Length: 327
Image: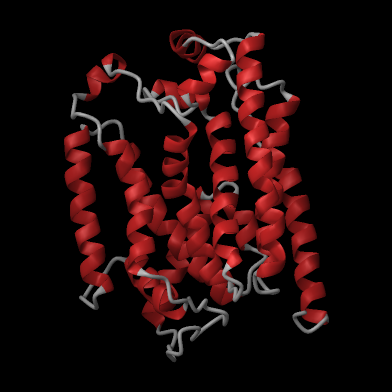
């Protein structure tokens, strides 16, 4: 598989930035700046063309996520909205007229960096996994059964669709030539998503979802109902719950090793951005560990000061790459 390696025209097509495309990218950058709490800081370390493309992909994902997660709207209606939106994207991607700035920017990025339709469809498939439950009125959310995963292999598939595919899209924008980068990007996405799952245990239970595998709960002596009650009422976790979350954190640590192995395989001008992103997500895992896995009392996050410090180091790395001629 040939990987896009140039900042523009990576697929051998010469494109011009029309005013319409420039404005579409500006809109996507604003969406990313406003919504991408962790991702945006890494975006800033990218060259402009790659930063624009990443912001377009993020804005596309953000819109799909917003449709999926709007719990004011019944599931059946969200499914219909998602299907109509995806059909509109397919029409735009095929060259049809569109006034949607996200579609305009993503269509341009897709051509510049050889991003397949399949990968973009998989991004949406990951989001729509949460729309496959039986449609119920919003008022009945509390009576929904908990959505669970029996084994880690099942959770891995979910993580692949919602996170690893993002990584596979990103490395096409970053640029790579070594095919090993694809598996490493997949596994780096798994690390990120397990970290998200650990941070969001409480919020996910409120949405009637438990992403921690049931086989792991049983192994650590944690009852599903007890975990749900803790998430709903708050308070510090007991030792069994801490041990469960530590087990998942160790699993994430295993996959973070793939992120370190991925860094030297992508284009030098994008390497600092990936380094910043890995540092921020890994720091989030560290913050959870420092809280002794109490993700129930308050939401754990990386401070803006730490994110900015990582960004500063990433920008320094970018400058060093430019001085050294991209080596």
